[in-house]
Image (cartoon, rainbow, N blue to C red; front, side, top):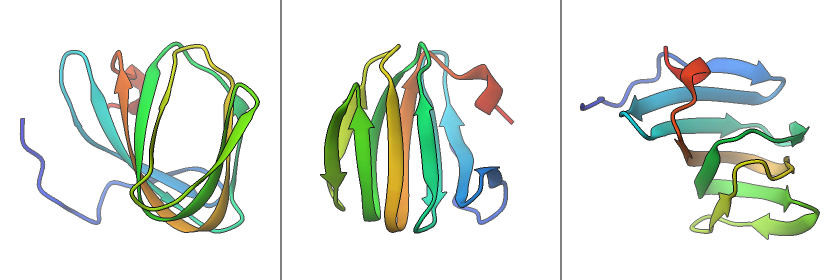
Length: 107
């Protein structure tokens, strides 16, 4: 499966947080997040493992109570079931891969 770059298809999931599924297969799904300064992703968990890479901007990520400021080029992995949240410190772009596939993210 190939997907060409496009500005279409983003959905606002929370104020200041937009996402777009880029591509998915049988076991993984890749999502691009556009994050606005000041936005908050509240504490939540899900059964999916979540691996991410910060393309640009700056965020504060908390995973099971451990907090880290994330800068461009930094990456993370969140185990399935882990409590996590994010605070957007600067406008940012993040790419994340979920496994297994998050069916609700398939357009």
